[in-house]
Image (cartoon, rainbow, N blue to C red; front, side):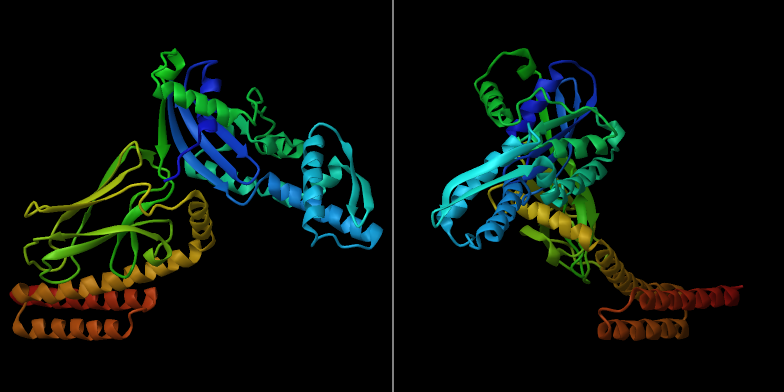
Length: 440
């Protein structure tokens, strides 16, 4: 799992030292190589993470690269030389671009002067803040998507955010601040924290807590993290059945009931996944375990409770219990054992959004197939005690025909399955009505 960082922790403490009461904080962390958003609710020293989002491929280095491309093209245009393959020249140009980016945060124009940049040729030019903003405009706007996603996940709108905290040197860029301020309808941004020093302060606070510092704000601080991805069990057809949803507060404990899919099962194999896609093949397998010792019974009758428990250290324990026999089994998954890193988490969240419509259609198709199969098995059983021989044969034949059709059409369309299930149910209703009429 991926929690919020020390800079975020410090930022929240710094703000909350100035007053109490429940309020929502948005942490906007744009550094050299990554971008992170965290939304927290703070209430009397308790910090609850409501949502996290970000982009692991967006940061100050990307802005530098745009400047480098621009200046490389300008050098080629002025001096008819391509310096892009000269490592030394490009390194000197990169250093100059970093300085340009920093300077343009406090002034509207700056110059670039590099002696003997390439083949003895000096390079001199000027660049304005407006030009820099134009070069990076799409990158600056790209910060809004994770921001919107975090608000959506936190079930909040812009007006419900009380404090906006900037972390990371790239948040000094005026256009970044302007875009953020416009997004929040003119709300002021919190600038009382040095963006470059937030993580260092956070580390100091963490050290103070670990060494038993008695300072009152530290003693009262409790930080509640969230799950970065949904957690669940694989069902028949490869479907993901979510037990703990993404952005659930940690620690947490959720229980859900499952049953068997095959007649007379005496054991069940559980596979635990994290991810946001409808099918487990697109998600990440965390671990598996087997629950044994079930009493043989018809499919769907056993009642098996599956519990997901995540402690404050993000250690996940998944357990299963057969309600009839009391037999149990479990698996424990730690952060160091097969969990995804932040970059992979963000990729999975983006893919889930991209394929949302396709995933929904595929899930509905599998659910329709499973529903028809369950209906067929159920109706095969029911007539045995509630109909005459002729009715039982008729119903059994219809069910067998449906089973054969299902075997030949494992990827049948949702609509076709629904039509066949309706036909089965109508046939049973007709038989049952006829039996009642005869009984009268």
